[in-house]
Length: 146
Image (tube, rainbow, N blue to C red; front, side, top):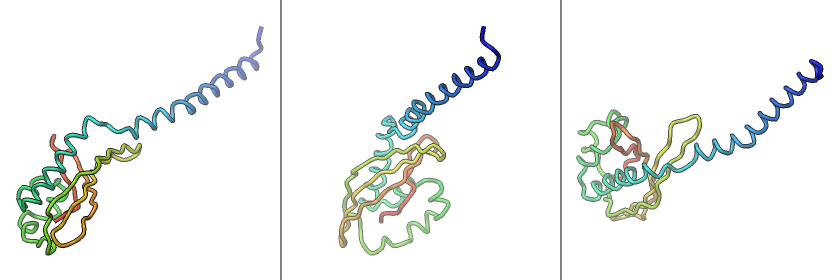
């Protein structure tokens, strides 16, 4: 028959082994889950960026403003956004090169689209458009590429 001290130390060893297994298996599995790319959202994110950039190329700035997230629209009214000059050059085209979805454990999911934007009178520029889902729609949260 085992003594109380042996049972106590055996229980401690079993608990420590369980903790070790959780650390060795649970942390990597959790990391894979948190940083995995959720491809279900990717088409909607890509479509939102495409629609925004297409509106900018067409100089449909009202349409582009409608695709901005609520924070960007609070920061700048439609009238101010439309009155602001487009920095003296115009967007002539774009190519979406990547859609990124990152799920850090302590912050909200980050989503952005990387696009190469071409301008009429300057070199192409790589931009990262932040995308958020608001009221069921994907919205662009800067930067302004005009």
